Length: 310
Image 1 (cartoon, rainbow, N blue to C red):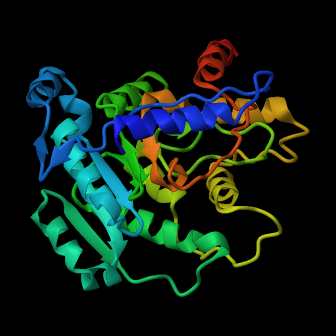
Image 2: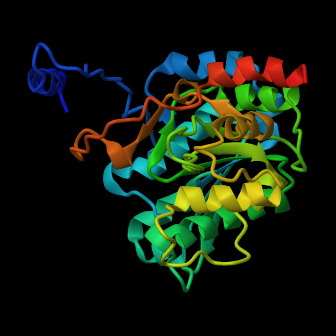
């Protein structure tokens, strides 16, 4: 898309809202052609990144990218190349399906400095294919454990992070705020909903490798029918029950629910990652309203002082 096309898109979208509209539209312009076969187009970009000291956190972390490969625009391939530049000391693991080998484009991934984990699809899909996500996530995290990595940042093949300091930031938070339950460390999650019980975004998580294995436990496949519970709710409730932190009727007992979130997890705002999610790209014409009733990082930080005083 040229800049002229981009401006036209912005003008079209803005024009679709009346002057008295309740909502405003904003855009983030993120570079797509950042790399070509692992080469940064901006020659100064690598030098700037190398001057930053994120070594300790990155050396202990594996980035697990799970899901089917996105070949359009070489999205997954370019994302991995980008990560190898901005997280040079982290281990990158692509966890996907055996059938990907049938695609000729997949050969290019073997040239990258990454580990590739190929799994057979699960026999039971589960509601909204949840067992696919669980199996590929678990397989990638297990490889991270086998390689000796203490932390995992789990993300997706259709998802790209632009913040080069996010691993160091989350690693530091896990050191500053130790777990209060039976988990080894707190898992960092994006802002959870407060008006949808136990709905935690699952597309980006950071935590201790053992805790992440527990979160993505594949012991019992999820069923195809779940009485209205979506995959995020299924996985989260299973995990917190393993910690003994389940809150009955969380929307009615909101204080207990929020206290549980603040004790067991690290709440992160989207700005920490500066991410792009291709699933909800502009070209896909996906328009959705994000709930404003979320537990933010500011809320979480302020409640840590209260909890420490108890």
